[in-house]
Image (tube, rainbow, N blue to C red; front, top):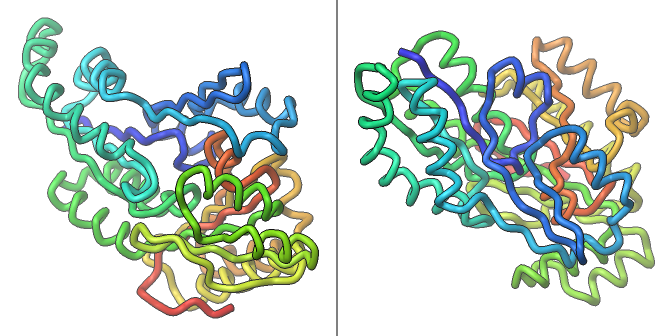
Length: 314
């Protein structure tokens, strides 16, 4: 059976991984002032956003996840011809309507695929499985990484779906913002009150950063740090300890809202890399999506891994 992968653009993975596994991308349209960016994980569009230095204003951007009609078109024009089964993974449904869009699109896709395949001379049924990763940004990477591994091993779709559900329920996504005012303005625009104006102002004045965690669709602060570098050192050190304690998927994904060359310069990153090498875990470096930078701010770090349930230790 020919099986493939599709993800929404805000899932942070390396370009090499996406190309190696021929991952289809459901784009997100980002509108800021009079400019429009198509967030589809293409390096040139990502670099255009970074070069425009829009970080101070991007909290006001409007983001439009891939509409139902475009999801249908992607599948009926290409994916139902290229594959017999596609696993479609999205960021958590609690933070984006894309999961709902894909589920709605699936009804028309499964209703109309037979005619498309018959006209192309392709026999047999087509299956589509939609998986909510229950996480955001780098936190979506473990489930997608595991999906690619299981597809390569030619595991049956039912077994893959069951395993991905387990990984999604045990994926942890951490976020360390640089600009607390940007984060506060963005979540206010989204109707979220988890960072108050007072907290943002005091935190900015004292250079106090929150460490945020997404787990099973819920995002909340799990710690506070003085200074971004100190926060990075704490986050990477924590991730190194989790690597040594054992992961459910041999992957730690780190995404950065800017030039990836900055990552090795951050305190604690060398130690995290050493822990991954010691334990046979891949350390994937991924550019943060345009959507991620709009929501968390340029220069932010997100980190994801899958592990047995545990309490945050910050």
